[in-house]
Length: 137
Image (tube, rainbow, N blue to C red; front, side, top):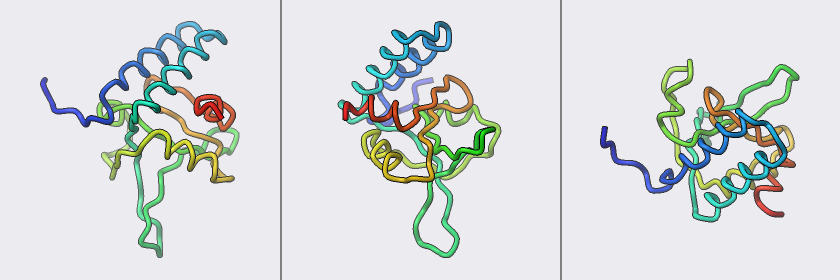
């Protein structure tokens, strides 16, 4: 299958590989490596796929959220369209967004706990602390 890829998603397979390795061996070193891989992709102007839904009574779109067992709300994003299609939900409206901008937005929205990357498969929960570490700020 030689499907054309969106430029901004090229290289995101490195993130998937790092997250897979982290799932196999959940150590501080592997977490640091995974965050470094995400940071590199961010600095290369990498993008994520995000699901959006229309905001009632507004022209704006809102990022879709997932509520975790503890009641926290998280945005979710995907490293590729293939990852998005692994979910149980029907295909949704999606957009590409710069990683850097998504991280900044997540840090600025108090009711969001962070971003869950690839919630259906090679998953990592980036809370605000991990996002700040990834951004290097």
